[in-house]
Image (tube, rainbow, N blue to C red; front, side, top):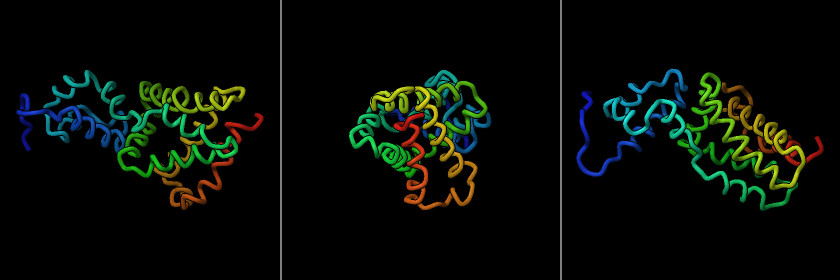
Length: 195
């Protein structure tokens, strides 16, 4: 298929099309193996348009892997219920996000890329620690919020890697309720119990 050059006629969906292709490729291939050229080919655009809209591969990556929900809403939602159930609420929320194909692709792309790409590592660290778990721990009024944030974040990353990237059995196919019963108490302890 020949890639058309120049601007498409009518309202442009080009940035959204590029972003969708990038999300899929970063999830499947990781940051290193996904290229501007391959993303442009999937989106049906010239590679120059990718750079025009996003500036660089790093910037495109940041745009493609952003959370599909405002972290502030997550914090408010999770902090509303009883403190004794916050670990379960955190895990159920993460599992509901991962149930959505596009959201799962974003998370998987971010985790895969965070292993090899410093910018991806920075973005992932910011999303988990700074924008989600640290504010949650602080909102719960607990001491050592940064440590609690990193402990809870490490548990979530481990679950996502085991279930969706490495596919470690029986964890990869464990039914959701059993997963919640098994892992939520650990997240609960990290966020609210004495350390």
